[in-house]
Length: 327
Image (cartoon, rainbow, N blue to C red; front, top):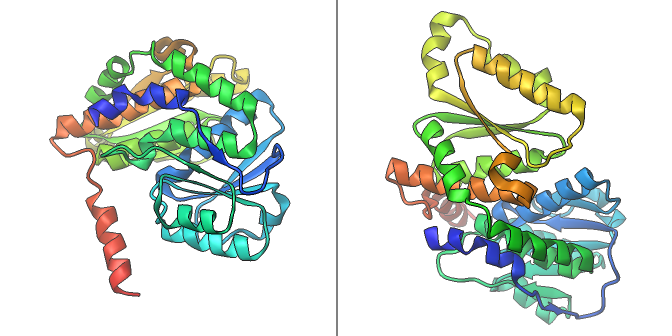
């Protein structure tokens, strides 16, 4: 996995080949149906559009079938890195039979075969040995942009690849890993970057085999924060088992929210909880994708510190096997 992380910036330089299967006009509203790591790039693109005031819309559906509002979208992208995800295959069948505009992003498998047979647009992503969907974010983002006809996004992502190569993500992640190894992790990010916090949670869960949760500020100021208020007798021990991470991918966020980030961090520290902030001081101009890069390294370094194999997803595999046996 270490080699995959070292090569992560190169994913953003990959040139996706969109097999037409019927031309797609430049889409304004895109629905991405995918599970796990296969929809994370869509979440990040949506956050980036929101932060920039871009009127293009990216929504994610991560379950069986398609939502009743799917007909509102110009394009439905079925995203499954393996091409074998049960829920996404179900979404394909329903969307295709409904005559909706569909396209596929996959590295192979049944989903790619269905797109080819249906003469639907698709992008085939690279699939090197050992690659996990949650670490294929650059390829996935570029596949989505290519299918949606977003040439400007493809150029932006190419620049991201060049910038990420200058970020010492492993160094920034080492400080985080030292803090959270052996602890539960609370991961927070300001609106509209909640997807970044959620992705960090996934890196810590799947790669680091660590329990973690995430929330967005200011929403967490109305609920989550109260979880840190407990009688000192009980909290003295538990506070040592929790670390709170604050992710601020870009400078220039809403000043009111920026103030809430700092006040929230201070209040949590007053409860005896260790905190750490990741932001521009760690990733420079790499912004959102730079903070994501640090998170990918953090999950790996936590796994290594705990002596576990970061690529294994044993419980996920066991659940899939149990579901197959009970059909």
